[in-house]
Image (cartoon, each protein chain N blue to C red):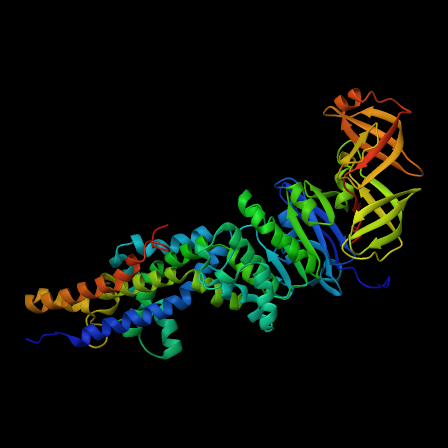
Length: 225
Length: 360
């Protein structure tokens, strides 16, 4: 018995969460910006689709993703043409699934932050000579920094804790798709309660430590509107 | 100034929105302060937003000096960040994450011509911001925020300054705190300024030209002082005067109106030989006997040619002197007490005389 069981699974979980958060910030920021400032009438539709993973059972989401990622599925075929490899039961497959699963946790705090900031500071910056792209960096980003912190932390913690989707599309391949939550489930199944305890406690502490700074600073730009 | 020199500001714009139509023009031949006056919701702020380029649906032409910012007919449209416009919003809109000093220099840094240290100090002193430079906006009062917003706009070296109700977000005490700063600033400024206000007292105090807006349209425009008295049932007196001389010790300018000499406070010797004097009819009193022991500089002999009752218990008097005419407004009670009738000999006591500088 080691003090830290399954270092490989832990490392994989952290890797998955980090990659997912970085990609989600990249994709979610323009999406949230468009939701906050765009003028399209079908915004509500997009908002509902983005929020779906919040209510859908992870197994349902995982099931559909698994079908899409199969070698003859839409995502699987696309991936095969682009990178010549399978998507289901691989680390990239986990990342794709996590992106969809954790999308609302990035988009909603950013959407709220952008909306509560409004156009007012942006207009002020423009009239002072700041081009739109620079205005994002010198005005919107600092004004919405708490929203970005919330988005980062929630998406990180949420990806760290995902189970159902990972089990469906990733399976349990050590070093490739066996993340902490799967490892704990496996240990409980095989009655290795000691290891399960240590890993669970570690995950609990880690999640708490990650969430604390968000709620420490009050609820500005929080998850709920 | 030659006739070909472009006006400091020319704009003729239209903006249509559901239930609202803005159609407005403004022409300032020389830099100076023009007020846009009208009731709330009449489109004053939208007019400023159009000038700043914040209303992409706005049609028409905006030209500041030699720079054409917008001309729908030639498909010219400059985005706000390239307009060199200083817009002071009603709600200040300071950047909360920056200290006052960094707020002030936000535009200057972007436009890559930071002010010289002396120029920075000068404006900071003028707006009385020295003690606030290292504070965060959240700790400032409404009046302080407005002053920072004005400084921030000016440091971005604008070619046009737009002020949207700079005094409305602050209470009466703070207002009297900002007003002197604005007056000093406007006395020094060399760019056109458009000041939006719904308070006529502020308009009178700060602007030399005024545009009256109602339901998105400019109803009237003209010299502020001249317009003031066309609004009621009496008019401003305009008197043609010839310069007689200027006394540097007393700082008084003496001028001939007809065959009478009047004296007017003036800090500098006059530039022109002839000028127009403006006299508020409310500031002309009459006496049936000569008045000697009073502070009033100008007491002129005249006779009453006509009187007519006005609204609010007032009486309008038409006075004729030696080669001049003047209208005075007194109360009907005073007119009865003095037993005024046409032909009566009177002394006009002129409390204040303004030299008309209003031709922007």
